[in-house]
Length: 400
Image (tube, rainbow, N blue to C red; front, top):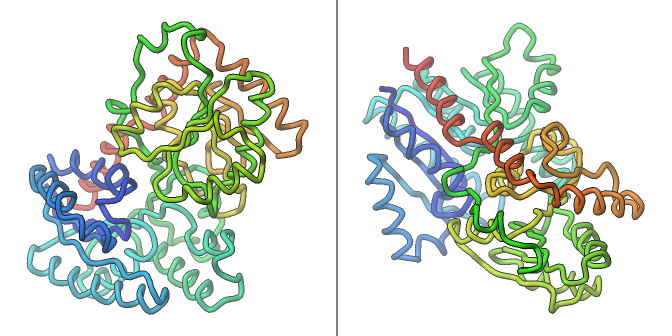
């Protein structure tokens, strides 16, 4: 049994933390002693019922959890403050509980983990989650010649050099890492563990599979974020083309906090508001809603940093038997979609390409075995149990 400190800058009270942190650690805690150090948003910490429910769930799985407050502004100073608190608390956990492995999710936690590695010689897992510094530039949040970008790339180099194991979400990112000159003769172990999905929760109902198309409208599902990385306008243009072919088609958007932004774009593109449903749901509600969708729609900026990304919703849609309409240039998404024939990935956003893509997508959605193909693809590429087993192997290898 290994003793692990897992550090995440994403709060475990957030949907992403619930699915992509707790989803793994609850299962890993059966074989390992795990501490979580997370940074929680003030709004979540003030929700007493939610906090107590999360704490009860964590302790039920024999996981030890320390939650620190996430500071947002001013950005650089707030992040430095969080890192300082994380280093102090992390060092106490490592020494007091004789932790052997620190598992850092992304870059800010890795600053803390690198400090712990240097001070205590603890084993260090760098769970990249993407090229974070490049994401900040690609998302127009930083300038490419800014001191923040240069400092972050310096840290990235030292994360990679000093890690005992590097975990990447995609094979495309591994190819890029293998070209880095400073890793020649210094390459740590590289492991690809994609964004996995609880396929017991994200499943599909045979009753819906066997229902007649005439009994319900054609439902296009859009789940999650609409800004920064997501090309929401292009997604809406695709839906409008679908509406031309299937007049009674509906767009179901599930989103937490960007409803004003969504309505603004719907009105600007003259999307029929009567054909759009906007809702906010918890994780179970998302899974239930996906089962009623005919296709999943999402478009992501095909920029350099996204070769290291896998959208969580891809595995969730496929697990529910829903084929996906998306674009290429994002991690391994297009290769999986095309190889398994479970969707359409656009290579460009010109109108002819989009119209052809829409028609191909509608034809695919009518295939008799499409739900089974999607489910099979999810089991092959996005199984949470497979992801847990991969982490389990890493933990055992570093604890021996």
